Image (cartoon, rainbow over all chains, first blue to last red; front, side):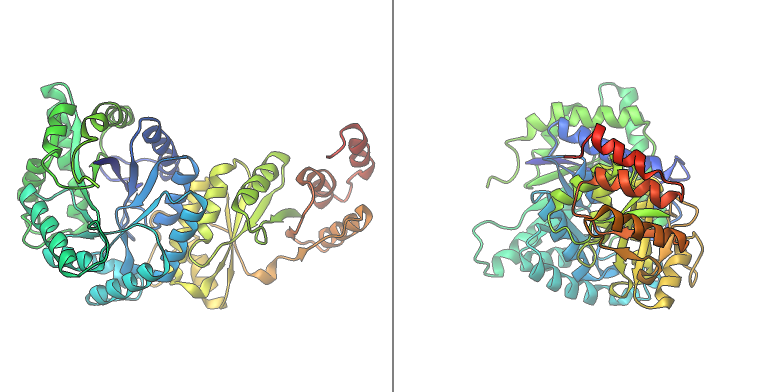
Length: 315
Length: 196
């Protein structure tokens, strides 16, 4: 099992206002730190036109992180494909992988905020059609490893049929995660693919390595408050127990239940129960002080990565 | 007048990066970069990360994407480069105007960029706004060309240059910036510190 870190959103939120320029300077610094500590990958996330500057252009952001490192993989977790011209996305992905030794991964999703579609003179009811036509272009014109972010079994099946990787949200329970993986895997098997191995599965998990109960309490608060961002964005997913639009407290409780906060051994034990290729540790919250973020990156690399080498999918 | 080193014709990315870092060290004001459609700011971001002082002028065809998408990419580049971004937008004037408005932090059709550019306003030019030269090897002819554009009050001049970046910096930057450039000093410098 590979261990990555995410999600770098490069925001300046109401809970923790900061300079955007500082946020963009910290991205390559964090990428170097992750690389120095043996972490597999760092993942970025996208939204458009939100008050906090949530990064709307992941390709130039990926470029600065790749330019600052030598071996670290950088991924988009996820780029909202219907809001972009797909050939431009494919061109950018190819350019990144040509320049940076194939270290770029393209994660894509559909988007869920009507205002983001309106900003591009689109309507949200076009998103599935745009996603499918976009994936047709991307898969035909770039060999870049491509992952699809999903929040329903139908979407997981679509990714499986195409032979594309799955990128699963950190807010879901183990039960929901396993259903999505099963739907993805079954659809791939039914597709009659000539590939020997099924497409990979990546899993975002809210986690934090702590030593004391006080630190544990603090970390859970960071996880909970970070989802205020998604409440503001209006994120809700069908049939997953997570709907920040209408049930913010219930959803935060659900997120807290799915978060893993403890020692590296405890986190490794929890992760051993997932049949996935990649776990992206979601630590890019907006509240932790800088020193806490850098410490957890170091501890994930030094303590968690060695414990999880043998977990997950054996390829 | 400020000189912009043209990197658009350099096919090898390692060479582009090397020339940009040399230009950064030797005080060239900026470089002009581009890339396949959608990868222009990807290329510019890599150059920005490898340099500290250069202005990165990114050349983009405005017809290949929604103006908001292009403006978002450029605004993020300006955050990454810490206010060192300038842009050449090809295509229709209307598109260029929309992008320029967004890159000034102002709304277009109710849309406002978030994050905004780091600069108060990112300079947006059309390709026709900036003259370009591919100077001959002869030093006197180079000097004459630079004088000609400087005295015509051009703000920027794009230079295609296939020789030493230090030579360009020594012989052209000061001349571009001042009608009082003492060529004798640059010539003496060539003797004291020959350019390889």
